[in-house]
Image (cartoon, rainbow, N blue to C red; front, side, top):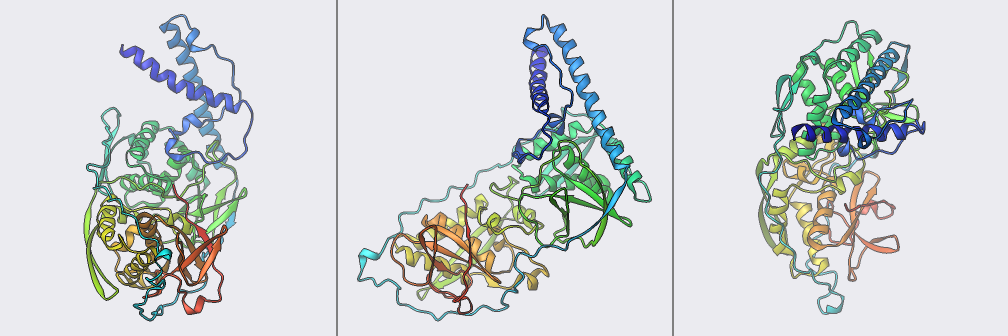
Length: 528
């Protein structure tokens, strides 16, 4: 029975192997669209086979012994191919490297944000008079947010693997791995193409496949996106190499390449740099263009490396084509670390107090997230704790009100429950918040508030929202079902009323004076 199960497992792997052979028989070496990174197994199932051959289908083999012989032959050739591919890449690394001049980081919005935002005059008069009930669309009953589920992440067994035990803490999760001691090699000195090629040789001849499998298991368990997987790899590297940053980046490069990403490394003087292409823009980090793709210098510290030029190799590792995707459509599943935040605001001369819980492990994870496209932040969500406490606290405040009044209440909440300060003043750099982050940090600015406000309007009121990208400012606009007076934009033949979560005390339909004559770029907020 055990033998039969084993044969079935190996057969499943061989099917993946043979399917790749069939694809590669077409000879297509062009760039392919990114597959879902969460679906990747370790790199050997994306291997490139130049000379596929016709094989006898396993189902037609006469006996289990013949099947064993078949597997030994085919997997032996599979292993031979892997060795040849790594040797070819190692040889490539020993060839001439070229100098690349780096482009300084792209700035998403070069216009400075206002240090102090204006305050709109308070008004107790509704924009839509109550004597016209036909124009008042009431908020339907809001469905309560479900309580958080515990425990969240699945356990990942490591007993089936051999090697030296490695234990790391990853945002509240204990990750236990078994690794080949050969990984703990040192990068030769001085740093040059020979030292880099030798390092690749050592790692590529190690027993790295069990580590790739374990990392994939943890990735699936914690539902990590591409950036989360890269952070996990980097955390493993930091634990193995401790205070050797060059070896850390070399390990990151090796593992990400084997996982199918188009990772590259470069060096200047005594420093190694890790680079990755991306589906979404990295802002304010150095990059160079190679083979039609932008390669960004990746940092896991939250601060961009400063580099004006470096040396890198010509060519790529076979079948490692994937760019990193920064989209965060599903939050990672860590052990919850609930922290409390008390908030208060005034609306229509009444004070509202609420207490919410956010996930500190999630906020810590987001702390070093690269600055990227606005829609990535607007498409994200909240942790289960924050959804439950925040939405259920705001729910009774908006129920039974007109849509316009409910939107104005949410505007006032976001405008006044959080203090304003630019990212430059708070962090010394640009940092866009995912909605969870507003509840840890003492200050937030325009794009942060707009992200949270858009989430609340969609999830509490069920209204469509778009982001408005002004020079030096981000706001939102809401598509009401009823008639609402004030400034608006037209998007896809629909009227969206401008609603600014940073213009203090402003109601729906009010625009900051400095932007009244400015046409913003509309950023649609996709649902997922």
